[in-house]
Image 1 (cartoon, one colour):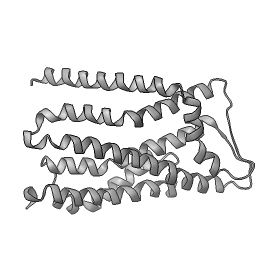
Image 2 (tube, rainbow, N blue to C red; image 1 turned 90 degrees about the vertical axis):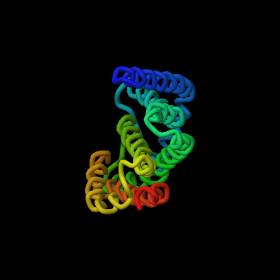
Image 3 (cartoon, rainbow, N blue to C red; image 1 turned 60 degrees about the horizontal axis):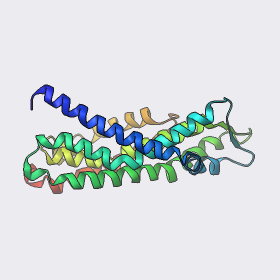
Image 4 (tube, rainbow, N blue to C red; image 1 turned 120 degrees about the vertical axis):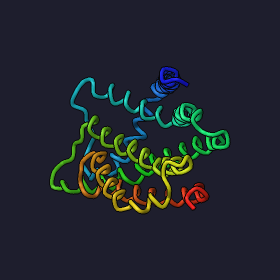
Length: 236
């Protein structure tokens, strides 16, 4: 394929992904109130007695409902979005490597969902309880927009972080990296992970950064271990 043909293929894949996402977003909008109520539970449960979540602008609930629908649609659309990514990359692979498509889509979806669940059930409660606990001498009144922004950044960030082993295994399988080189530069990877954790952490505090960084380091090692299995012949 020529460069222009690659661009046309990319446009086609992006268009299909966008159409699927918009359809799922519209479907999620019909249940946006229930979705938002579910998503805000970790924030509500982490507030001490007397704390509450309020809104201060007329349009605030509308936009947060939209964002909640968009977040739900993202996780539901994950398998199709990953398929579009694979379909764009697959023509550049050997035929005997295209069997990885099913594994890429399945494990990519599972790890993305697992990351979101970890963020929702573990990272958000831990971070919010610690941060809100610093102000126990005051009355907590979080705005709806700020509370959802914190939650969504942690959930999406964790979903993306949990894709790290998939990326490492894929790069190792196609020969762009080797397990030996990944371990050789492990200290550099830890520094890079710390920087990434600082960037994607909503508040920048040490605890929330650690909640992101520690799983990333473990996932990096997991990715290297699996890469050693799938790329053993190439690395030896």
